[in-house]
Image 1 (cartoon, rainbow, N blue to C red):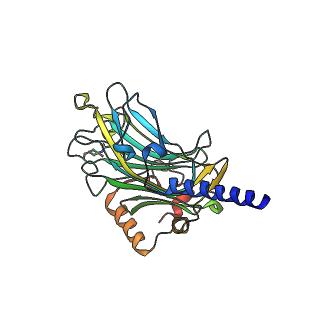
Image 2: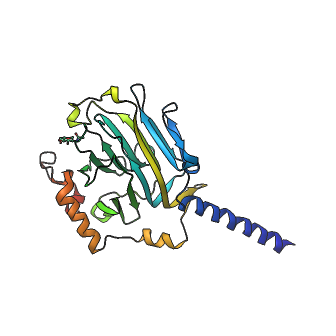
Image 3: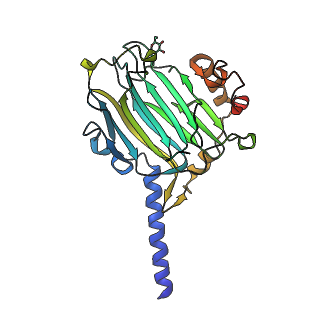
Length: 288
Ligand SMILES: *[C@@H]1O[C@H](CO)[C@@H](O)[C@H](O)[C@H]1NC(C)=O
């Protein structure tokens, strides 16, 4: 009797683990994975949970956040940005923990007037401190189709990728005195908002409200990740865990990263001598 009760408990336990794993790994529903947090009806989950849209008008933007908190993972999202005249609008898509010493891994898409390119802004905060901006152009128009924006966050490195092309790597360099995000679980956040005081050409171009509402769309969210559950992080024991946990940039990926840097990077804090007259932040020395 005792042993069959025990095996029943073990069985239930396995079921729970299996369903948690499935929930976090499958390209899955926005209903299951996200909560709409603001925007008074401007954010919508559509098509039985396969799509999500954020919209912005003169009154308000909108946003959502993940139900789960993650501590390391490979997180992919397909996004189609505001099209046409998107000047003044910003779509932020990021991971963040809470509090004054929070960690954060950011993608931000700054809109532009019709025909002019978006700016993809990235940053990494550790222990509440950011200031590690790198900005890029994209090699495609991000408003006509969905493209995949990925954050790989392992104990060794953070890799930002666009359609599987790495655009930025932030390495674990704590022995060099550079803090790395490794203790604080993060949620995924996204929002669409008006930042026409600074976003487009330094704030000179204002949002054209006659084109509102502006819309950003999301689909195919996928997280191979460690999920915080009852205060403990549970990682996938499935095959995919080992691949993302140990992933590094191979030769081809490093070539792609260099190609992006050479052709599409428009700002790098690590080369901004005006900003750092006393010398660059320590991690700059080790950034390929
Ligand atoms: C918008 O286009 C202008 C002109 O091509 C460019 O200088 C600017 O960096 C672009 N992006 C933003 C966000 O202003």
